[in-house]
View 1 (spheres, rainbow, N blue to C red):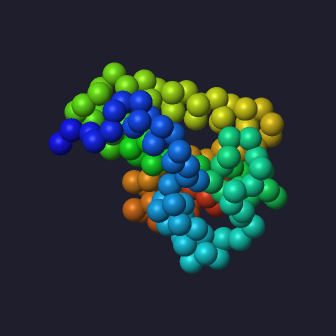
View 2: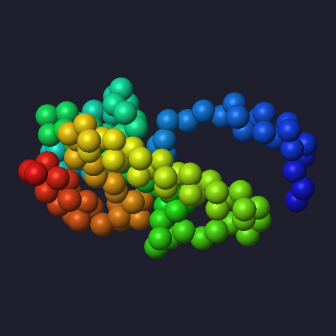
Length: 135
């Protein structure tokens, strides 16, 4: 089905959409943290790179990366249309993720990235969190 907007109008409409990350995956992790009694985390804190969760006491920044938007090697399937745009988009996202991780580590933070599909194995995610908090 063709788009009902012109290219410039579609760009205007999309530019007005603002979000604060992937709510579904963030909420899954928040429920997981609560159910395992993991405390000391905060969300939406003014830390470089805007981590999804931080544990200030442990200097741990946690990102929950959606498989689609961050180009998961396991789950990523390139959209059939507009491949050039999407390829550039995923590359920019990956570059930004690397840059943010590097800068946070330089500032003394431990960075943990959890893929969306990893949330299907909660015990493994909890184990990674505990290990990261101990180091």
